[in-house]
Image (cartoon, rainbow, N blue to C red; front, top):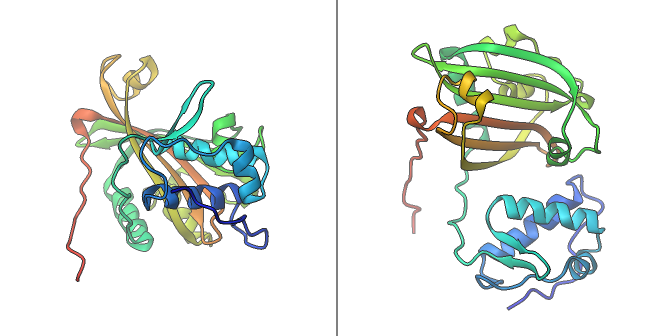
Length: 251
């Protein structure tokens, strides 16, 4: 059954319009209001449904594609995935930030670079900034037992006015530093996938070209749901572990 609601985007809210469209479509998909494999409305119809532009609609769809909830078929349209993943787990953001601080204090870093640059188009889109946006780019290799385990690249919009120096990374990560500098973190989208090491990543992580890597992309939002940080990290698959504690919800 397809949704029939009128436009749901509220221009009075601080949340970006593409995020409102993404959230609504995502909930409809996960709640079963679209069947697996069902074709979505055209971009034009979605624009009319939500009262937004094609650029806004396309950006929301890009997020859903990245999450694996939908896929595009050239010349035919956009379809819900045949097999939908389990709804992503929600974690407490304050607890997550505290863990990041502890991780930074117990970790070692090398090849640290911090510089203001013109971001790539995909980074600007993830941060909901126009093409050619400027970001503070922070990159480093994380060490475990004095051996490289992962390489991270963080982009923070310069319009936030947040400065970060190498010494700041001894006691926190970019996300926790933002919180310490007055940016209230409201949440984040966390996407985990897989890829293969190219020559650059193989050199940084001391592995071979073509070896498996875990790819982690995180877009962090403030309490008004505005993107404030974009992280792209690659971890050696043979040294990566992701712990999730599960519990039963009370009846």
